[in-house]
Length: 423
Image (cartoon, rainbow, N blue to C red; front, side, top):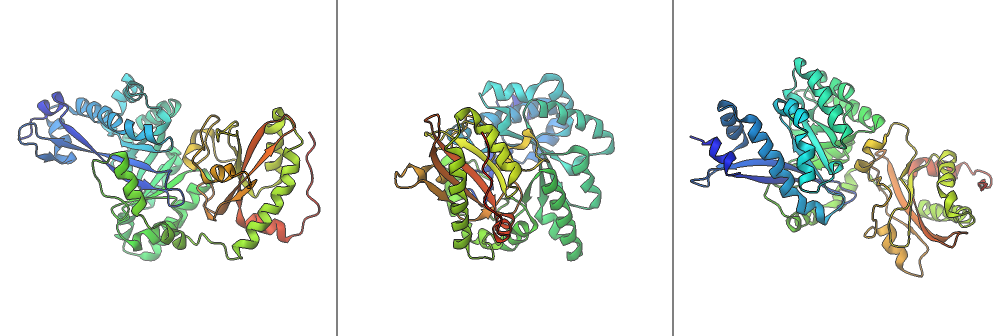
């Protein structure tokens, strides 16, 4: 028999993580937490189902939820300290929604361990939602989103009835369960369903994660469906990971295969497209070199208004620190979910990114990355950067993300001489 009171009193639980990968950027990963109980006497592992069933029977569900949340954040904090991009996915039982609002427990626990709320994604189990829960869920989401948390809806796609949760809750993330989709009887139904869901998500600025990826076939289906991130035993086991062990899992992943699956290489010769990007940048340099630092934001906004193929952009100083907010060319994306798409705020350090480190070489003034699938649009893109000294005498790195297809169309149309912006 499980002595749940003793387990809670002694904090006798262990936190396991599973890695959620972003195939185009190994450094930008997330982890989802899973709780296991530890019998204080035998040290036997207790499954979450047994653990929460025992707590419910003894009327200790709220106390167990509190313990699991704080223990998870405490365990995650050393990982977060070593990587400013990694995010935590934490499952919160609907039964705890009301106490969480009344006590502000999740935010208080994050503050206790010095973890910013925008590093935490609250996962809501779609399959456990009942009609009577909807007002409470709306209140919970609104309350915690205002605190800076991100919201994810799990297990979208079991049937068409689930799709309305996207519209109802407008989450930051949806999770498509690959194993659940594999069990659907009609393959054509599955294909159309997934295409429909991911299309909605991309238009609304929602990140799509494919979960339950357990084979290379699952991986191919997930990436071709439009998922930006992947999770499952093909990617990562569920273990009591520390940061170095997570890096080892990431290193073992076959990124080249993932790029081939998503057709990340554009049909045209890459070399010609990249040369066109570099040539186009030469025009942009002449613009930025002749303006003052105070006019950077105005000119960048003007640039995006004129060139729709620039998905996003920002400025860095000579240390790789972002000195502007991220600019985006997509009206459906609000400030609340920029970081999920690799769009970071003013003050964020990019010192380890290729588009900055390459420019530390005094012989290089430009850099263009290999093509990749953009998190922002799910289209093929390349990131380009160039270094300039502007009229104010400041060394600035301009970072631009080019969408391949509209950029190539623009070049192919042989536009007249590029219009220079006025100060």
